Image (cartoon, rainbow, N blue to C red; front, side, top):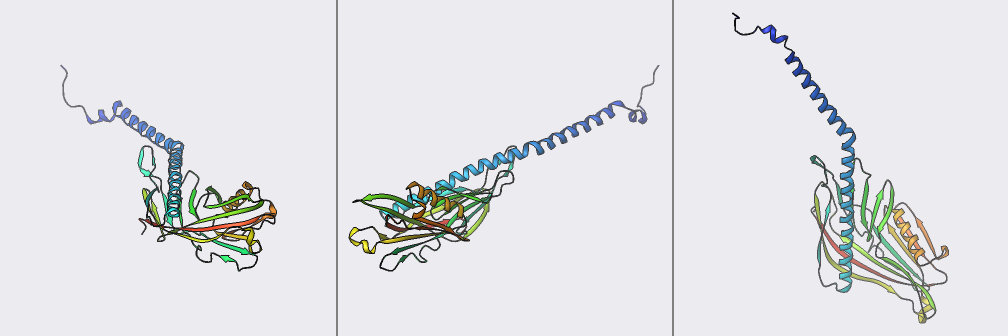
Length: 310
């Protein structure tokens, strides 16, 4: 008859089932580590890049909508400057989430009136003294967004002098044009170039905010000033405009140079009709066509801008 009882402790130490369990656990941990490493190296950068790309697409739409809202307010002021219109322009400073890691979102910074901007217009005539906007448009205000991307290329969006500009890797491109228009036409057998400058002046406190959520910009139409107008009149040809000097203050010189060159080409101006130059923070377009008359209209729309930065 066999004796029943507890097994000796040394029998457990020699148990194959214990060894196999430990080996299985080690293999499972190894598989988890390999999986996490593979995801971290191969998939996480792609997910982050996709999230940042999606976020930049949202920012582009928001900044485009912001410019459209400013243009609407400007047009409303031109029609009736006694009516006050308020519009909200939310900007998605951050918020696109990375799959499976919802606590990780994209972000960036929103800056109000923190960049260089401004205009100076000088109208030279035959007899009378030149007209100049002076310091009236010396600073016109900006709204810019700078991302904090780690995988997708950094694209900075800047609204300045009525234009929306994108900057990428040190190069700038104007995506939406300002209220500066050049037209060429003929009246009573006289060819002339008509220049319209509708400057937008954003009035608000200066500030910078880093965020990964949506920030709202409140716009209020404030004032419309008719600064100067000089239309070509054959009866006053002896005191007509001889040249128009338009200087833009900006950090995005390439974008403004491209804008002026494209504008000149659209109305078939020749190289002898204008001079384009730049300095550290300015781009100057000097219009002096020898065979065409000149006329100009300069207006200023003042828009109050308020954000959570104040």
